Length: 165
Image (cartoon, rainbow, N blue to C red; front, side, top):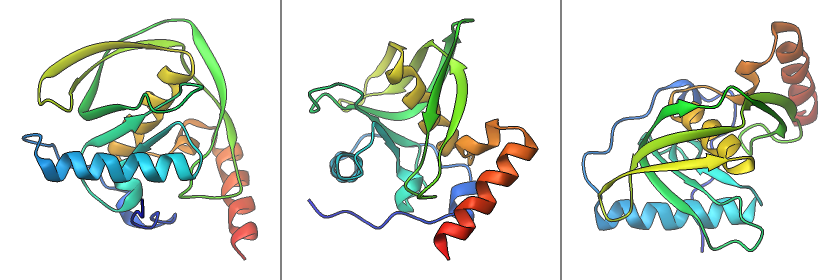
């Protein structure tokens, strides 16, 4: 399935907090399908609508090994996080060619509107939790490298610029 192009860093759309979704419509469901196609093509384990230039609080996550188990979320919000951290090498199709180890809570509970338009609370652990947090950051106008020290962030952005030519 074709999808919109990824918005490339430093496009200001990636720094702008997304708008709240007021109801789940067929257009929203179609956008989720498009996002899943883009996520699978990367291949990646999550995607936020803002990464495709759509300023809505929508995310998809599929950290399963078999794929086809994507969780569709509108307006995700973190209710609780574990104290135990988990380190993971994170990257983004919006800033290709670079990645960095980021430490985030190992588990969390998230509240969101699901594909049926119902409020759902769900627990995520491990890679699922990392990806959900990564997408929520995107929806807030943040990138994974914002969680790095200034020195590490500057090095990563210099490297990305060099790769981009």
